[in-house]
Image (cartoon, helix red, strand yellow):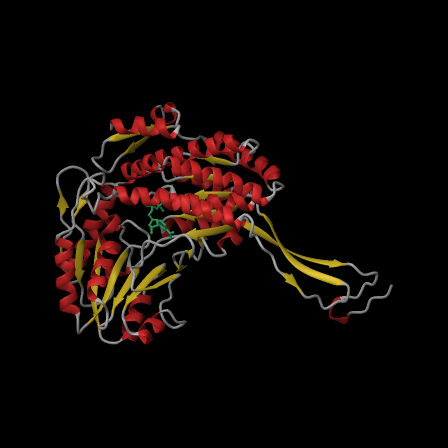
Length: 496
Ligand code: NAD
């Protein structure tokens, strides 16, 4: 793929970092090799963690708005290279070009957010019960943040963490997915350019560790990693979470989802059908927030199904770099086989399958599948990272909410309705149990302004907007006595 050398050079990546190594990188577009990334050994991971720790000691004393200036410069570098980075994301992950560009835009957005935040890392002032005293809460830099990321958002997820961590005073060591190291190297090169412009950023403020699980495990077990933010499968989180907890480290887990939507009888069916197509078939079903289960009111079930089948039939599956394409390939053969396995199980459960075929003869392009199931259970309770939408009928909203919540994961959810009572019930305390609950939009495609993450086996972490920054800082409660007396709290007397 001739494109790669041009893109990597424009993004500032040294050729030998992605051509001379042992980690073979393939594009899901046609399965061809696009690079051989140099892998970090134990000594170089150790050196990067030590470098980050040294950087922390300097960076924590830099005023937060000045730290924000570095993130502003990085955002500028991203803006200048959005087209190249977006294209590289598409080539490495197989997502369509507009989504590759969208991922780069999301990085720019979080940089903007973090720059503003760098002047808003507010604490509280608290009334003291003692005369001549005041109390307040201060937020201080936490330490080195380790980021482990998944293949499907190869760079945006890192930026959600890194932009906040950097303004909060924390260096970042990043272990990207072994399936997508090239985009990580490109982002690191852009960061280096921004740091050079900034002038006096400490070395080691941002580094990338290339490797598979073993490299990730070094971050997991190292006590200098104050916060480990890990995005990926629930299997990975189940391994990582307890290990970080065993050393009393902090972890922020962003794991699998099994997201659902409800289409109520009063819904705008045209809007609902369009939203379902994007959420379930878009990104070839490889978003953590992809729509996987759909509950349709029995009164409109046939109408909704025929609209969806028609819309699915018109989806263009193919080369993600072609502007006409809406559905690109699955990441690799393993993903394809897991999709086949899920469809076989659905069939064995009595599922009626429309679509799901292998398209073409190169790489792993598939037609998104709709599976009508009579019973909510079996394979539908598992996350299969592929474009499969399980569809069920429901009678009452209580029944639909109960089914939507009856899975182990708790990431994202939505309802389509024009009835305000139904909408409010869905987002109420006894409605959706997910971290994200939407009305009249699908469960995927979140904006950076809100806190992102989910409950239950999704891991409970929150990243990106709102007050997610607090995870990257340590809270300190301060009591200051500005009087000459020494009254004790709760009226305790201790006159020595
Ligand atoms: P994965 O779990 O296979 O790998 C994710 C990352 O974890 C990779 O960098 C991998 O090298 C690393 N890793 C795996 N096992 C590890 C271990 N024991 N110790 C340390 N590191 C380890 O996931 P994937 O296939 O790349 O991504 C798909 C999954 O990620 C899906 O389940 C999806 O829902 C989830 N995901 C979740 C979110 C979210 O925000 N909740 C976002 C994107 C993806």
